[in-house]
Image (tube, one colour):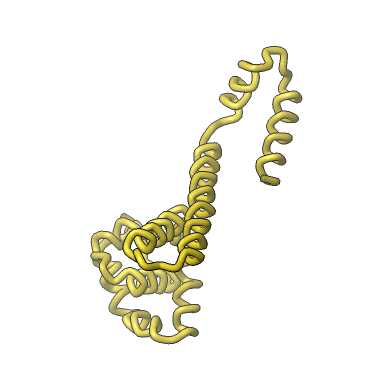
Amino acid sequence: MSAKKLDPLRMKQIAAWKSTHPDMTLKDLSKLFEVSEARVRYALQKYSDFALMQNTKKGRQIVGSLISDVIKEEDVIKNQISTILSELETSTDMVVSTRLKLMNEYLTLKNKVTALTLQKHLKSIDADLIARIIRRFKPSASNEDIIKIFNEELAKAKNE
């Protein structure tokens, strides 16, 4: 937990996040923002009007821009997948075209979260491991060959 004073932007982010996640406890917010519970409490008191901002379009835009740094894309997509699946499961009288649209959205999001997971995983892999994998299939590959193969596959992946 940080001992330094919170800057106003960070306090606004805490208040904005709480306004969009009202069930979160001070302890949860403290862990998420890596500050003490006392600092979270102070931020919520100082910017208590953020809860009311959710009632207007402009307010939601302001809150959204503040929490964009905190949001994890993968978590948002997983939440949307859960929402789509629950809608499909609970709405038995849904029109077929709507059901197909939701299934298509589900599959698109599922592919996106898989790609994000893989991308996050690959960022943590070092170049030495990538070189070893390539050399397993092409033992005579030079470092230049490895870079070339890597860049070609990366370009193919971006185009898919």
